[in-house]
Image 1 (cartoon, rainbow, N blue to C red):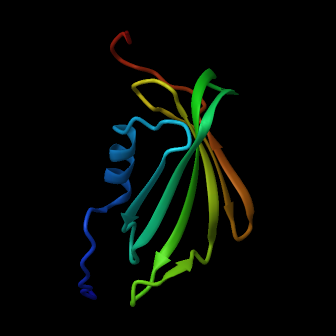
Image 2 (cartoon, rainbow, N blue to C red):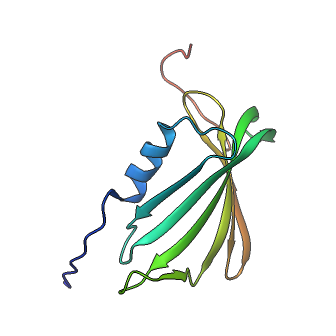
Length: 127
C-alpha cells in the first residue's frame, strides 16, 4: 500500500460530509465549502443551496431543497484542478429534519446520469 501524508483542516470522508451538511440550516443561496477525501485524492466540494422546489419522484411528492455541487481536485501544490470525470451535480433533498436524498442529476464525462428515490419505509411511526 502507498502511504500519503497531507494536512487539511476539517477534512471529511463522503459520509461525514453528508452528515455534516444535513445538520446545517441550508438557507437559500448559502454556500458551503468542504474538503472531502473520497478515495485517493482530496477535493474541494462547493455546495450551494439554489432554493426550494416541489418535486415528484416515484416515492411521492416532496418539498425540497435544491442544491448545486461542484468538485475541484486539490493538487500536490494546493492548486485547484477540474475533476476529470465529474462536472457538477444537482441534488434534491427533502425540506424537513430528515433531509432525505430524493433525486440527484450528475453531469459526468459520458453525459448526464440521475438517480431517484423509488420508495422508503420506516419501522417506527414518523411524527
